[in-house]
Length: 622
Image (tube, rainbow, N blue to C red):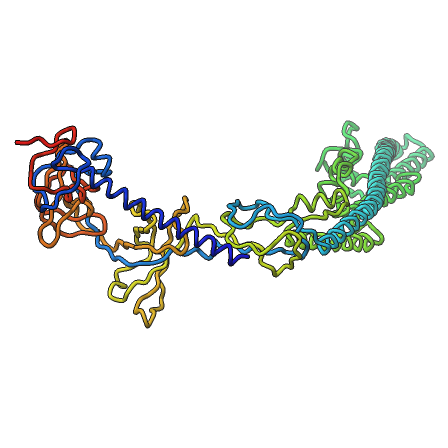
């Protein structure tokens, strides 16, 4: 069937070409008849004489008949060019082969041979049992992931609750230990204050006894001296002397006893003397401190040195021991919080405010990430998470497999959401272009290796040509190229040299070259013969005319100059040329108007008379 289609296409092209040749021939004959230097009208026969030398005047109808065109003489750059031939080729990267990713039965065709399509358009629909089985696997994998996720979420919630309770217990223990330490510290401070007061009172009592004993000893000493003096004069009785001596000895003993109480507390003799000599205005503890620091009944030295003055010092010792135990408990509960994952800053916040706001607002994931060490058996959570992740990976693999089989993401998501299997699947165009081959029919069973369509995109084409060795050194990649094809003789396509082969054909003595050409209107079709002009260099700007304007053979060259409705022949001297322009060394000036199309008809309109044509196309006789 494909062969018959190709034969039919070739036959149509042949008949069309023959028809175009016939039409062109009759159009040319009609145009030639329209140019008449002499005769009754513009449609007379051509004379058989030589080439007319005189001016020619054409009516508007005659100009239209020969499709006369002109161009102004201007300054142009004559280029150095290399001309080669080649053929239009499709770019390999712009030929798309459409194959199904999965086997199935063709249920619908959207396009057929010759159709132009855009990338992504649906080409056909398939019904595939293999793809349906993969969808069922996708649904099962999706359900498994959801089940494992729900179970994992429940486990995380339970474990997070345990972590919160554990943190709450540890927080409460810490806060209670802080309260207990504060209570014990307050009680100890109060007990120390009371004990310091008792010690101070006892020291004051001892000072009073010491001063009293000193005063009484001084009185006894004075009485004793007075009686001794009287006794020497035999004024006083011996009995009275003995009594005074006894009072003096008693007073001395009492003073020594009062001093001994201070000495037992470690007070030095000079300090005791200061106490004795003081007038009672300065507190005794200030005297005992030697005046080195202000008196404070709560300072540490007072309790350490004179604690023995208390009736029951064991109470103070026990209170201090209780305080030390409270301090240790605070440190212990703090270490438990640190071990749980709390930072020093969080513990400081807890100490200052009695609560940690961040713990209450913390998400389950953050709670478990930071305080997983509080769990007795964290392995269950790790195992649950590992199982869930493996299921997710399996689901991703299934999704990727379906994507590779040409299912879209929206279709995959729809199957997962609804749980319903899609029975038909589309094969889409991988590229824009025209279907140039079709090897699939409705109802056919296709396999992944089958080629269904071939799509050709001729928006950009290559033209392959041979560059011979004698000019190969002039050709470089990136050079501009002008392309002409027979189908469009008046149109010039442009491109650039893309690739020059490193290998030279030993038979042709030429290297292959590939020119890339933009072809948005798809006029250039693979297989066309093309004439290529490669621009290798550019010369200075000169006065030049299009090649089509120049007529004549051999050394004699001329053009037709337009001056109003009259066309005169002018001899010119030529210089260098390229594929578009030829340098005019003499005979023309910039601004002159030359005929570039229809000049052959002007030259053919020859005759013996050189009388110009009238405006109406009729010649005037002299």
